[in-house]
Image (cartoon, rainbow, N blue to C red; front, top):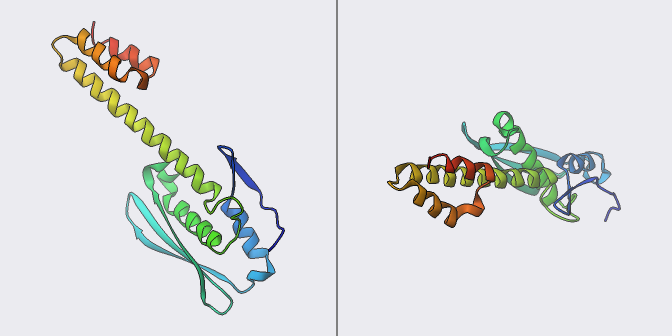
Length: 172
């Protein structure tokens, strides 16, 4: 096994190798001379993309395959580059399946950063939805003060101070 030290990125206390580091190693390591990477868009539409990445050895035999999926709405970068990010993720996963840069994880730093961003967006959407439901509940209540108290008792810890302040404006 190689003693090559990959540059990594620390995400939430764990080191992840970036796809570019895996790719540089693959292209420069004599073991992989004659190997190829082939990418295929399996599915694409205006909202998401799935890419399959296949690595073949010098004899053109498949030695690793991986897939990746990206949603256009999952991050700011994906709004314009979800297909490119999907291809990069698929290549990173295929290189990991080949055994490159997996000392701590098959997931690359890029993948983990995207996953964290997706979780944050999902949490924001959940908070917005709960806030919007609360606003509608208070607006539609005959006793707005009582409705506000019910909402804050049940969901108060899930709202920011700014959201709580906004909710109280519907009582006045």
